[in-house]
Length: 285
Image (tube, rainbow, N blue to C red; front, side):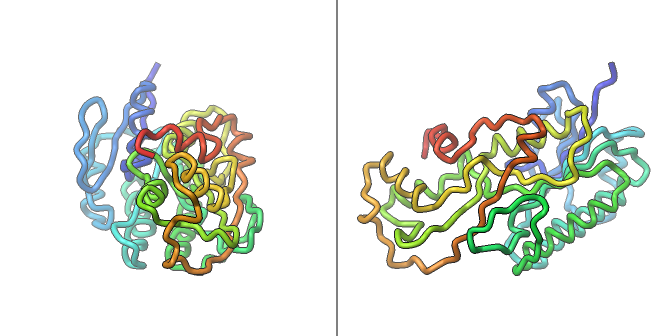
């Protein structure tokens, strides 16, 4: 049986985990980053996605052959500026699609963000909810999504919530240091997903036999009120919520509550369905 082939564009925190999972499952994998070195059996590609000629040359030298079964586009911006987001998500995807013009791509999976939703009053959000982002980051992500939909490959967009996991422990670190991240006076919802579930779901979409939906929300089962999250960390770390330094906190909107109905309908089973399971699995949290 011929080995399936995958190209992971942006093989960093999430994309790198996808590359490793697919490689373990027997795929032939190319992992593209700006600087990271990869060892066999994963084929590493180092290139600046903003450089069209460099992307073209890198893909020619990779020798994919006539077909890639899956391309996963999971990039991140170098910095939080409009120019950086445009280069990573829009120009980068344009250059990738152009460089793959002569390669038959079976499935394209593009990672986006729940940040494309501007709702902030506790609304429940699903794949059909309107997207009218107020910030440049959401607008650039929507541009990337729209560009992805012009591809000839079968395309799925995955809007991930806030990603946490190994080496990403800012919230418990704040509580450990005696600082609050949530006001006790008003709810503030956040939608999160553990890195292993984000990568697991992307891998699931890459390999599933049925045709995926064109759009998914990649979040866990519980849009958590940050007050509850903070209280849970306090209990684990022996702190009282009222003892945390909160003078720097400013009033913030309630936030939105994203639903993962289609994710679960795809057959993927979340390893960490809530922040409690996810953070409890981290030795440094």
